[in-house]
Image (cartoon, rainbow, N blue to C red; front, side, top):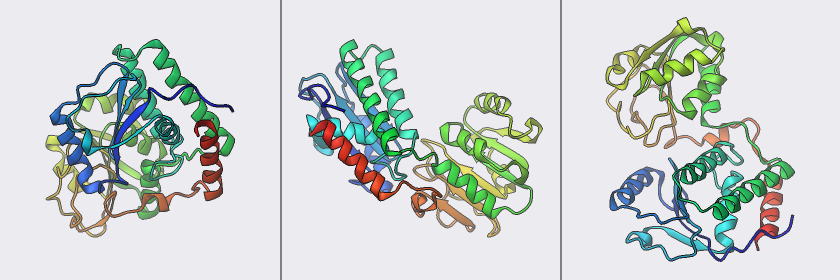
Length: 303
């Protein structure tokens, strides 16, 4: 596949769940944001619940007072990490597709805001293409994620039609909805900051009859959560929001928010990013041999 273009202008400052505990990562990120980033041209940020990465393709030194709080890599190693990240090889669920979508969105958003020169943008797009080729060549493409695991837990834990609450209106909540076993549903209580947003999503999907849905905002969600037999939560920037809720031991909650919305002493069967290895619940994990062959391919591109 040949070497990619010169990497001398590339550098990355990053922190993720492998370097900082998941419990402290979100607080760390907020501290960094409050300090101000002062991003220059040809820079962009990848921010998820488990990582915060700043890529600089400007070739200029980035002046930032909190740089010492990050791991720093540059040159070939920076590009190697970027491709590995795109391939899902730095994720908890190896090969997951969501990280590719998140990175592409971050780059296109930076381009839309006129933060990237055309040459830099097309350079990055070429890295997307390299990563896709690595994924395809070595079958690094896990279609499962936290939301599909949540749907499988529901299918396992709920034996008859039940009241199910969904908290959040983003990618994970919608993915959970699209993977749910509709025969297990009596009512769907969908809770989100923007009720209009989730109403639009519900009307577009064709898996669950619209008459089964009830919509609520976060402010009036607690009574509804108490009525639910099963809860799937994937919400951002509201950690601990429902930490005082206590449910029956017959209930089940899958909370993939980070930080979690609920506390560990919720009293029911509780799955969260803090207490569950979700990657071990994947039905078809990427084999170690495929990961190794993909890593070797990335090495041949970069090193």
